[in-house]
Image 1 (cartoon, one colour):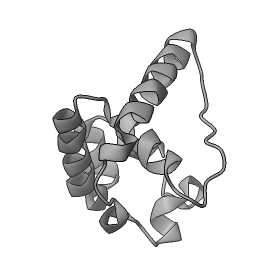
Image 2 (spheres, rainbow, N blue to C red):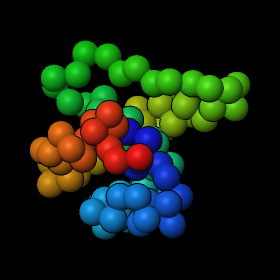
Image 3 (tube, rainbow, N blue to C red):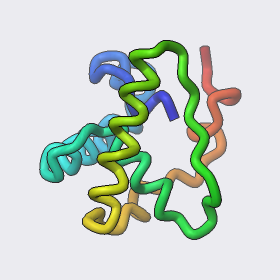
Length: 101
């Protein structure tokens, strides 16, 4: 979700409960020498329950970034630790339609 990619200040302000998780995922991305979107795509892509990953694009630059992230994700997927501890069961937190504006 887009909340995971917000700048740190916006994240702390809008989703304080998510800050620690994102900081840890960013540290993991740095350790693996890839972007945070690459880690997130790799995590989703290796889920058995996911048949396809659909990503939105709003510009040519965004498309290039997404392709690069996907290519990196393929490279690091097997090196990801178990990300189950980061799972968020609350629909209030996961579904953008439920977020307070």
